[in-house]
Length: 418
Image 1 (cartoon, rainbow, N blue to C red):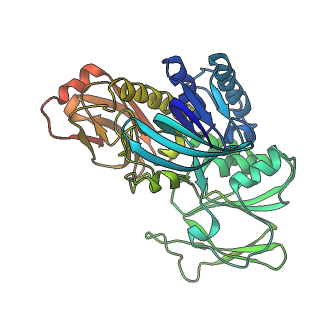
Image 2: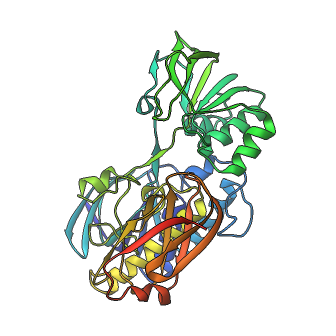
Image 3: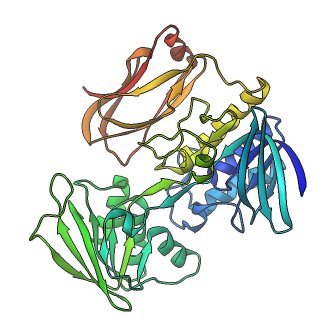
């Protein structure tokens, strides 16, 4: 078995992983990027719609265009990478030595690295995770599967479609199907508000007169060889189906757009601490997990609504890897826990030092209008006309403000009325 030595091993060749590898290389770290698919790029490769890069490149790009720009940077930086390579196991030998066995087309190689940046993305929730029962016929897809069929292989998954869940990918697929003359019978959302960005609700549903059933759920799929119909019910305040409210929608296809979960099984095997709210790893301000020298970024860390944030996290993780390596296995001294205050469902990072700037990513528990997102301990306050659970709040706090934490025992992130 060949042994390869690097400063940084990046796992995952999507936007976060590519950005991490480029940044690490620019910082003078010998870097290897490993991707299990046939080419780099990740999910945006199958996204032919615009809306990518507005923050990072300050342009409105398609997913493919966004990825190509990142890959061009990777090539210019001369970063080594492997595709069709699968990380079978990661072992933590010491603070400055992690070993990963990587299955490649030419055999298994052992990669020894001082730091690892894990950016393997997320997986989609499937039908049985959301409590839908019934038959198991052809015609049931996740939103990502349907998107791959249409935008990579040119195959229309069905003619009469019901979409379960109103996440952004589901909304985008509703528009995509309508443009191909399929009939989207309804988008069914269990919550009382849409699960995706409001711009997508407008552009993908309202502009195409596609019904959005809020406060409803699909309780059953019916069909023999192919989907024939779904049974839909209204839900109560506890999100349970209301008896007697059921009705049927004939269709030949069901697309599940019920959200994503960070894919972190390799990290779990290493004993990384997990946040129940994000379903991803607990990290400090440099995006270092509870295992020293192992960093996380992108949707493997927290589900992002914008790919620009995933790229930013990849770069942040690379900066963290440099700090870790330069300080011989140490990224900070005294860590302060970040507490979730009023109307905060999740926040990343989970620990801060007060020694450097921090980018916070947060989501609220419920929609509110005219509020402040604030961190009182450092005197930070940002006004929002409205906040919604599907839309991530991003807040950059400079080093000067973070140093106000000196001697304090906690820091609280919260949303309060104006």
